[in-house]
Length: 412
Ligand SMILES: [Zn+2]
Image (cartoon, rainbow, N blue to C red; front, side, top):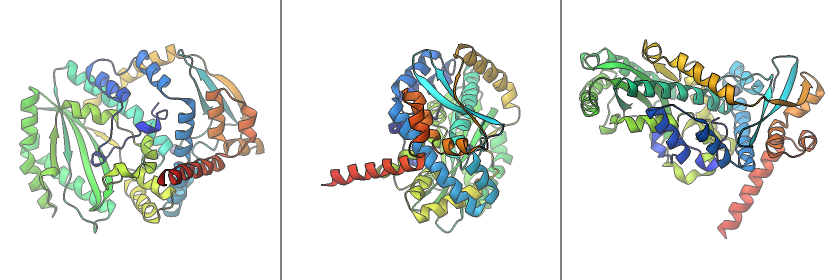
């Protein structure tokens, strides 16, 4: 569902990039931290807001970025790169289908069945969007649980002072080591703590790699006291950093209230921010990995090397770390299963509109037009024209050229 947004709403995970949160996302965040994570009315409203042409354009950009990611990762990690290349293109069974779902509000969506997904949450823009959406839903369950339990939610962001000399992997290791030290400290263990969820992120800016940890803490006691208690550990973080030979300024330890946690979860999932590559002015000099990828796709060689460094540094790392026992306490798995069952019960049956035997020439040709085929399903246009028309790569080149033409005109 994250894969179906307006390009204008594309956001960054990086706090530094000061993202604009869309109304739809805000309301979802609010729902997540208040009552039920989602309802049908919300979903229908969102779908109506996205015109098929905009969706198609965003999809084309995402798949173009995925092709670039596969090419870049293959150069530094062949196995992971090949999996990325196969994602969405290779079949895991003898046949592949193109399915059409007509939703209760009349909108139509298309999808392929029978193709593999690489599951690389760090380097695959397609899988990242899907997986992050599911993980955000899980965090929303925990936020709702905290509310029901009368717990206070605090959002903590940790970082340290860094410069261009520090490689991505080393900066991630350093912040994690300092954080382990902090968590062993008496101050941290003294928090009235019911659990936490931590995300590791990195951006690249003027001062090099900027690693940061975002932690949502669930604490007993009233919100003011909870925030104060976490704020009180600032000196403990400085101490932990200095043990690792690091320092931090006042931004190295940021404590924010529950609303910040809700907003963070609403924009969690970075796959959709790819088209920020087209909006370079909104960046504050700091680029998320997806922005690096978008720049690499646009021919920026330094961005390409940085994306490769990032992909290698983050390989095998967990996107979210839940403190022990929190998922069980908050009944996250049970709640998500019930939510998915309810979603399925209200969803209409998909209709198979095309079928290919995998490994055939027909499929090899069709898959190079996978975005065109889905766009045709969603717009209700001729499937034959899509299947035998220009490839996605050619269509993407046309889009880029058209965009450049428009930019050139506005310069005059
Ligand atoms: Zn993938």
